Amino acid sequence: MRRFGGYIAIMLALLLSACAKREEPLYQQQLLTFGTLVEISIWGADKSLAQHASSQVGADLQQMHNDWHAWHDSPLVRMNRALAAGESVTVPVSILPLVQKSITLSRASEGMFNPAIGRLIKLWGFEQDDLPIGPPPDLKAIDTLTKQRPGMNDLILDGSQLRSTNPAVQLDFGAIAKGYGVDLAIARLRELGVQNAIINAGGNLRAIGKHGDRPWRIGIRNPRGAGVLASIETRGDESILTSGDYERFFEYQGKRYHHIIDPRSGCPATGVISVTVIADDAATADAASTALFVAGPQRWRETAKKLGITQVMLVDDKGRMVATPAMAARLRFEVDPPPKVTVTPL
Ligand code: ADP
Ligand code: MG
Image (cartoon, rainbow, N blue to C red; front, side):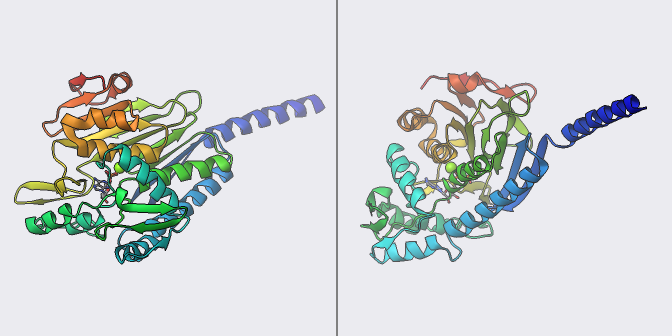
């Protein structure tokens, strides 16, 4: 009898561990924050740890959203006001890394990524909750702002003291904030003991570890039409970010006006509809995807080299796809027939 009881205990334990495994490996949570849908996927952690970690990440992201907001009353908005008035400001700790990273990345991209053009972004109507409906702004107003050439080089940062030598500078971190937010969220997960995860903020993601005994597989959105264009298996810790003209745009008299502005013309960048880059961290990948989008079909290679990015996929405004060899080798197309890709070294 005692032997029999022992068998039952062992069988129960096996059954329980099988159930636990079936129930626990993948934890997924969706949050609406940062003006986008954020998906958190965690593999192989206890459910209670996964729940705790994702609620921490949710709180972190909400805090960043509040701190970095470009038009709601926020520490950034107050800082911009002081900078425009010529004052020297103490940059809040939550904003300082964004300023530092942006200065470096803007310089490396030769101003293609330029978070100092907040006034232009506002003029185009993209610094507001609702999408603009057009008409596009007056050409004279665009020209006046563009000629003032606001840039990150106009900023003088000394420790955490910041001032601007150009009153036209208005900081808008829309092209790097989601990426940097994802970096901080991944750091939070690691600190809490999560080793396998993806944080995906509206197609801007960083993956760590694996999905059990296989790599994470992520999808790249089709820039025209619904669904996934291609998928990629991630390798360890990697960030994969896409900038597209479909994220925020309005159509006026049959023409699309989107939210990625070319600081040279003051108008939405032309020639490209989406750029995907892979880099070690999401902040760099975010700034780089925007910079390459702005650099356009002729100049993106040069900009990628300057930013140290080797894995790029770009779709131009004729729907043609170009990829670097390092990126092309990893793409698995999810559309039938698969598109033709021109593989081009940097
Ligand atoms: P997505 O919203 O698709 O992630 P991006 O990362 O390219 O797109 O960021 C676009 C946002 O960045 C815009 O909404 C605007 O706030 C800001 N922005 C637009 N053009 C530029 C630019 N040339 N450099 C830096 N920031 C920009
Ligand atoms: Mg970006």
